[in-house]
Image (cartoon, rainbow, N blue to C red; front, side, top):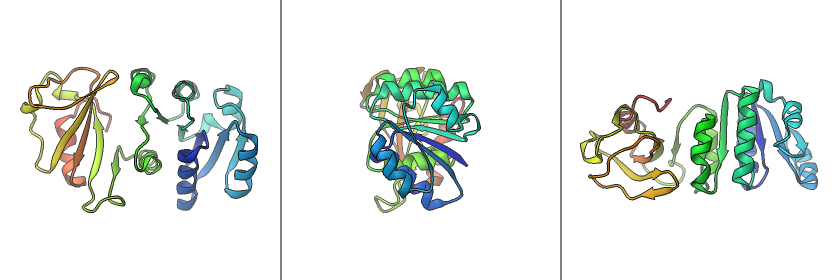
Length: 220
């Protein structure tokens, strides 16, 4: 798998180390910091390029046209969004962006970004799971019981109140992201187009049951 990571801060470096540890990946790392790139080029078994990840020529040099995944983890939401747009132009099959603020989430969704992650306890592990095709974060390394966290759009549940949803035992909607605001869920909240539901479930089997509730346009 060819993976390009743009932005080598804490998240980018941790993700790179996870991928290198797995082995079998063609890894390309991009950052503006020349000194950092020189250090990482000797530390990691990867192609390290110094420069601006929003430059199409640099992404072309990185092999974006043949990449399986492009991950934008710079400290700028705007830059990450631009990188995602360029990734789409290159035809990268899977694009993941880190957003510090929810304000650009609708724009990224409109672009067709596959996954949006926000800084949390284990964002690099979350990205790694998405790279491999999993759409939820496995907290089994953080808490006992294998709890999982996932994001869903309403799908076929659009227009329903939360009280009307047949969620399985052992699952809970912990938040609803609507535009740039987080809504505390309660039974009378009606799901709308563009909502993002954050769901926690006690295990993979339970999360699979939750997925059926929101089937339709979740792309899972």
